Length: 173
Image 1 (cartoon, rainbow, N blue to C red):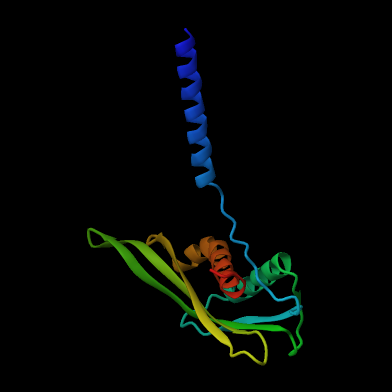
Image 2: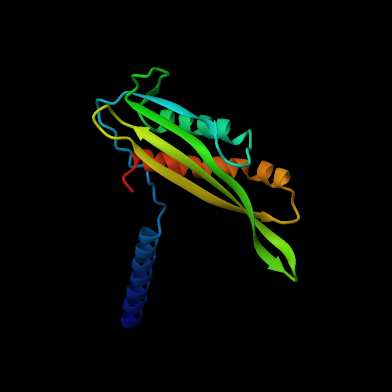
C-alpha cells in the first residue's frame, strides 16, 4: 500500500511539473520594449498624405489618430506641431490595391487587399532619417464589393498597420 501511495505522489508530481513547464513556455508575450532616450520629450506626426493609386479616404486619418493615441498612451512623449519636435514622423499610404488570390472552377473566390505605408522617421538633426515601409494583406470574399470589404476591414487594417509602425519606431525587434 505504501508503494502504491508513493507511485501516485510521484505521478501527480510529474504531471504538475509537466503542466507548469508547459504553461510557462506558452505564456502570453508582451512586446512592449519601448526604448526612448530620457532627453526626448516630444513628437510630431504627419501621415495625412495618400499616394496610392486607389484612395480610401478613411484610412489615413484613422491611421494617424490611432498611431498618435498609441504613442501618447505607451510612451512618455507629448505631441507637438512644432518643427522643433524631438521626433518627427512623416508618412503616406503608398499602396492600396486588390488582387485575386483564390479561384475555383474559373470563378474568383478570394481577394487580397494590400495596404502599404511609407514612413520617414527623423530623430534629431545629427542622425540621418530612417525610412521604412510596412505592408499588410487582408483577405476577403470575392463576392463582396471593395467598398463593403474595406468598411469591414478598416479597424483591422488600422490596428495592424499601427502596431507594425509603432514597433518599427520604438521597439528593438
